[in-house]
Length: 186
Image (tube, rainbow, N blue to C red):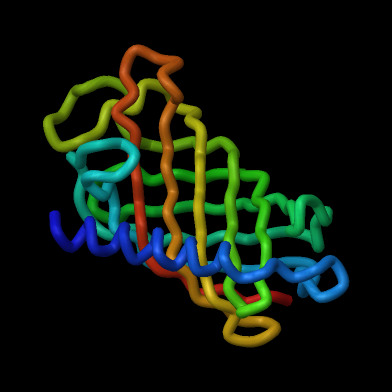
């Protein structure tokens, strides 16, 4: 549990540092290319985060494509994101589509926030003791990403995703994943 709290503290500190740095102006902000591919490894169903507890286990593989140069709004670019997080140990996997807002800062750090929908293959009701009861097949998908631009094309980041039905169904145990990603712009 201490390692989780230390990791969350590190992410919060990194976010605060990035937000403290001046955001790039519209002329200085690196305009995204036509698409960006991101992928990485996530800790599945992390305990003690937004969902509050963990039942499922394992490591997930995440892959995502951000499409188009996007629309400049509120100091960042809003783009569609299409991706999936896959668990190969028999636990919940999901595909998602989001509206993703990403802002670049003068110190080469960036912050990404999103909101979208996910479709999953997990349980809807509490059938098994080691699977989350997610309540509905289509869920809200909320990603947060803080990262560093290595150059004009490459990035590394800490990525968090939350998936739940927002208490619109009888069961809503929710699912959180956290990990590292690498990105390439084209």
